[in-house]
Every structure is written in C-alpha cells, then in structure tokens.
Length: 213
Image 1 (tube, one colour):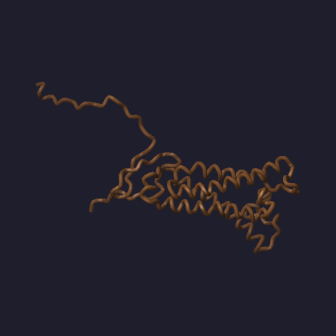
Image 2 (cartoon, helix red, strand yellow; image 1 turned 135 degrees about the vertical axis):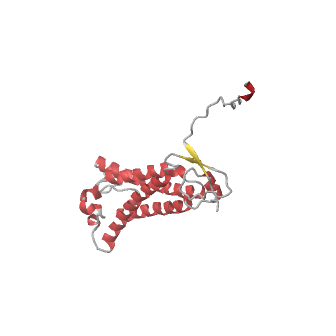
Image 3 (spheres, one colour; image 1 turned 60 degrees about the vertical axis):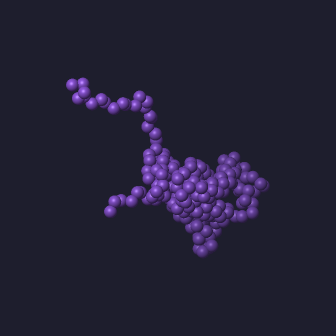
C-alpha cells in the first residue's frame, strides 16, 4: 500500500516576500522588463499627463498676457491672462506665482526617476532651468512679504528683471523650461533598446510576444 502512495513533492522552506513591481515582456526577443508600481513606474504616464496639463495651462496664461500687450495694446498691469480677467487679484499674488514655481520644481524632481538615458538628460535640463526660475520667484515672494523691494527698485524685482521686463522675462523662462520637457517626453516615448531595458515605467509602448496565428 505504501508503494501506491505518491510521495508529495518537496516544498520550499524559504519565503520570498512580495515585491512592489511586476514583470512584463519587452520588445520581441528581449528579456522580461521589471516594472515598478510607484509614481515613476506604472503610474508614470498618468502623473506626466496631469503634470503637463498644468504646465500647458500656465504657459497658455503667459502667452495670453503677451498677446494682450503686443496685439491688443494693453498696458502690462491690464494684461491679466485668462484667469486674471475673472480674478484680478491672481495676477498680483506672489503666493500664487511662487506656489506654481515651487510645484514645477517638485514635479520635475519627483518624476525624474521615470526617465532614462537621453530623455532623463533633457528632463534634468528643464529641472535646472526651473530651479533658477523658482529662485527668481522666491526673491519676488520675499520682497512682497517683507514689503521691501530689493536692488533699489520701487516694486519687487528679480535679478533678471533688472534687464528684461517681468512679463517678457517669465514668458521666456516658461518657454525654455517647456521645450526640453517636450524633447524629454518625445525621447521617453521612443527609447532605444538600452533605455527601454532600464525603464521602470510603461510609458513607452512595449511590444508583447507575437500572438499565434
């Protein structure tokens, strides 16, 4: 009777804890790719899309201001963008301007780990420029809170604003931050094999193994 009883297979005695990532297939013929489940992993695409929506909306406000000044002939104080037409206090709030600059710095920093290779280089270029842009807004914010303009000016003034008017300056800042962000995202969605292998997110389309015909 003992001979009829199949011996149970050996069970592993060790336990492997669950990891916060999943395995997916890369390009045909390539090894499986480990995908993180965090904001720079499976959540990277939706986080980037949300962040870019905010960036585009802010950039559009600056473009609208420039249009109001150079096409409609408005004086700078009356060029309030879109939201400023309905909420005039917004255009004068250094809390709002500095808050957005800070959100931009944090967003660029937090989302950087989802990028690899060339796309990460361009993303960090945008981060570096935005960090300086944030410093400029910090100077304006401090002057507004202290009630003391710096550099002998009558109103709060940033360093670069000593040379370039505020509206044009911050349109320029937002433009030169936005351009490398676009390049980074373009390359991020079109990685080379090495970048695809290093990626921890699912932003780039990954070709699954061919389906049987």
